[in-house]
Length: 147
Image 1 (cartoon, rainbow, N blue to C red):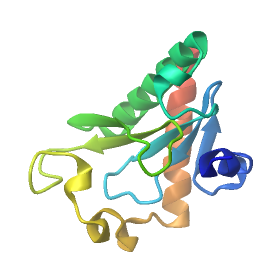
Image 2 (cartoon, rainbow, N blue to C red; image 1 turned 45 degrees about the horizontal axis):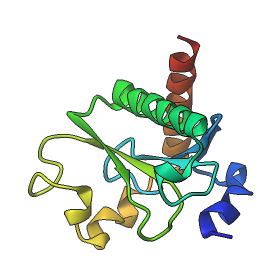
Image 3 (cartoon, one colour; image 1 turned 180 degrees about the vertical axis):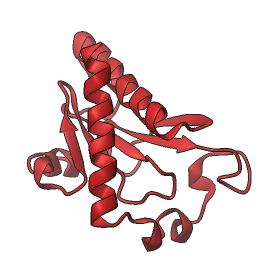
Image 4 (tube, one colour; image 1 turned 135 degrees about the horizontal axis):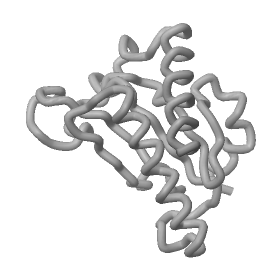
């Protein structure tokens, strides 16, 4: 079993867990160098989108865009990066990075930054801030889903 599938058995115990959608789990990024950074983990295992059954895949992509829209509505980025990599963990999971002009030295992926900057411990939100961000994101996703 992959490490993401194993971790998802206990995902609701993760302090960064925001909410469950039909096809995935919304999780606040551990580091907030890019305020609003959120991850959307697919419930089904698969290294690539084409591995998913068609109807599930379409629903997953729809839900992923709702999560992205919620992040944009809250954090008002200049651009939102949707990243589906899977090189380190071959399980479909989206990294949604709200970007603002000048947030990196050159206009490029967040991964141009050295790990000590991207994963700087000072960018971990406090417990109170983490809860505040989770509530804002959850409320906005729920609002969008009611439309």
